[in-house]
Image (cartoon, rainbow, N blue to C red; front, side, top):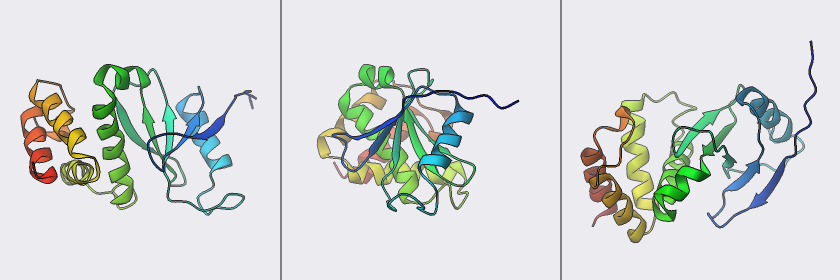
Length: 166
């Protein structure tokens, strides 16, 4: 049975550089359908762009994650509540980390997490301001938890410090 769902969707610029925000309150499956319809992989009906799509999801259990649609579309999903709790600089790092996965083509090339996560941390540490890198270093050194695939918080902090060169 086909169900029709009316969803308000808007795309608008934000102050995070070239990231575009797709705002929708939808389930994961519906999200992928919307990405397929509104952001086709070959750019049909849309100007081709390398800008990531940023999707707000206040129910996401982590600050940010990268999702890949059935046709290879990539979007960064983030939790605005957790971003607010972590602070602007830490949230910026997390979003930049997920964008680094896109830039490094980790999902497209199926790069294993034990390789892709440290690479994304290092790339993000080089992309953000020194102030942001120091803030995220302090965040992890103060005991902020991180998924196991990133290593311990202290290991992640040390990697960020080396890559950001401070």
